[in-house]
Amino acid sequence: MFDYTVRRLLIAVPTLVIISLVIFLVLSLAPNDPMAQVPLTVPPEVKEKMREALGLGQPLYVQFWKWLVQFFWIEPQVLIDHYFGTNFSEDKLRVISWQTRAPVMDTVVQRLPQTLWVVGMSYVVAIAISIPIGIYSAYKQYSIFDQAGTFITMVGYSIPPFFTGPLVIVIFAVYLEWFPSTYDTLHEVNNWESFIVQLKQMFLPVMVLAIQGTAQISRYMRSAILDNLNQDYVRTARAKGLSESIVILVHVLRNSMIPVITVIALNLPLIFGGAIITEQVFKVNGIGQQLILAIYANDLPTIQTLTFIFAFLIVFFNLVADVLYALLDPRIRYE
Amino acid sequence: MSNKIKNQEILFSPGSSYWGDVWLQFKKHKGALLGAIIFFGIVITVMLGPFLWPFEPNAIDIRSRNQGPSLLHPFGTDQLGRDTFSRMIAGGQTSITVGLAAMFLSLVLGTFIGVIAGYFKRLDGILMRFTDLFLSLPLLPLLLLMMFLFREPLSVSYGPERGMFILIVFAIGVTSWMPTARIVRGDVLALKQREFVIAARSIGTPDQKIIIRHILPNILSPILVSATLGIANAIITESALSFLGLGFPPDFPTWGRLLNDAVDYLQLHPERVMWPGLAISLTVLSINFLGDGLRDALDPRIRGR
Image (cartoon, rainbow over all chains, first blue to last red; front, side, top):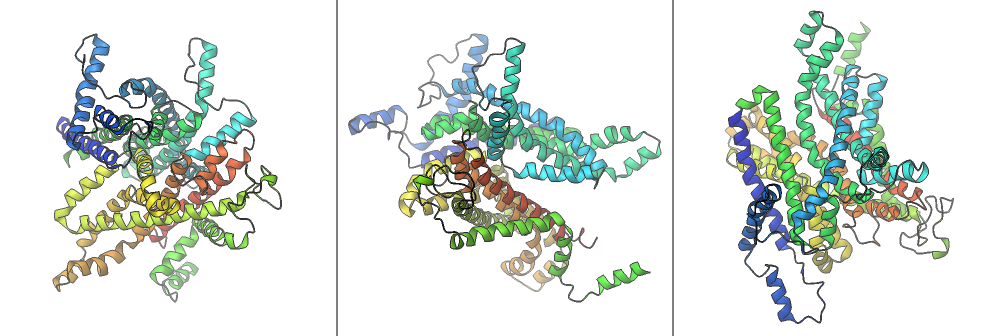
């Protein structure tokens, strides 16, 4: 098991480096000029100096190497300094945003909690809803519940978040006026009333993302249970006289969870992608919205860093899926 | 007794061809049949609409702006008095054309890489690592980035609409071929061991002939299924990009763009979000059902049951 995990980790590291290289090359191939916003009255020599100050005059491999050093060597030191009060990172150059002139990671750290709260919450909700639905519709295959469930999950799977977003705003914020249509990040939770306000403002974005997640997970759950229900061990368990609830909820469920857990881990990056759109719709100031803002402002260091963070999340959850799969199903480890 | 006769009738029914059997199985899946009808209905409406509908999508009539649905304008008009129905038709044309073209590109790429990886053992490892690498790229951020960075140079050299069309189709095609490649590779690996391929090789058939004559026809069904799902994926991606303001130019309607414009009037005219949203959802839903039915119909293990 340990060997297997180490092997997977060793594959993940070069993958990440190559991905960051791809992102870097896409950015550097771009014909955009970060000096386009500078007034025309600034003479060309000064512009050239400004460009050099941003580090743009150097060859590509130097720029890439500097980014790698800043991101993987200096930024962790900043983190250590922050927690332990040391000063490893003093006087070292960090990844600076061209837009705000502040370190990119500082903004990311401010914005990441909002994204994680909304995405994490919606995933928890999606899992909590979809697993019972999947179990019941597989157990009563072709019943009315199953037919309706399959149809509804297909609908939920097909409706994109940029339509469900405005749709729930129209229904719940405009007509019913139950929930606010935007997410207020400055809101602080310090008593029961403010907690209710927080719950209310989280409801709609979480719902939009949870619809997407529920549809995907419950489809997998249903087919995984169906695969297992015809297995010999189920007949054996029933023949032993175990009650139906134990057969389904202990024997079948545990075996069916193996592929479903992989799907849960693998789909999480997709939900992060959906979070970019959802944050835009509900004005949540998470990292997805920051990415859109940075793209519009031509802020290359921020774009590079954020895209890499998304890539990191994908590779990380792929790794988690692989390791969990091996942990749950011993046959995988000896491939 | 009657059952037996019935079975024999099926067995000896005249004209029982491969595609005839597929059609018989496909017909049984009511959702898929309905999905096919709705999808082709939408495609025909969108393609023939401009010839039949009197209003131009970009004709501004400021006096009749912000109207609700009426007999003259069944979907109402927007803030400049443009007829929403004609804009929906024009938008659908773009969205569906982009969907089909991007699907075709990703299918060609995916099939090519899948066949090469499955057939030539030496290239298998490297091509599959390459596929895995593409699968771990953050696709939506990268697409947004490509849109933003390459929009202007392409608009300059090909004109704003055609440049954007080329960019979107290329970007979606290049980022969505991986599932097809994986499925195709798996099937080719299995097919390569079959007797007819070995027989073909033993009489000295060159590799490219084996691939074209013997392999490709046999992997047609997984390719068809991923083609349908590819259209749905491409339509959603294009709409997402237009929705985020990084798609086609503002005066050039697509469904995602119309949805994005309608969000600004969410408080005053909430019904305006519905038309493009419903069009996207209905198209994608019907394609997904179509794909489901096609998968069942083309699977020989399920067919005939």
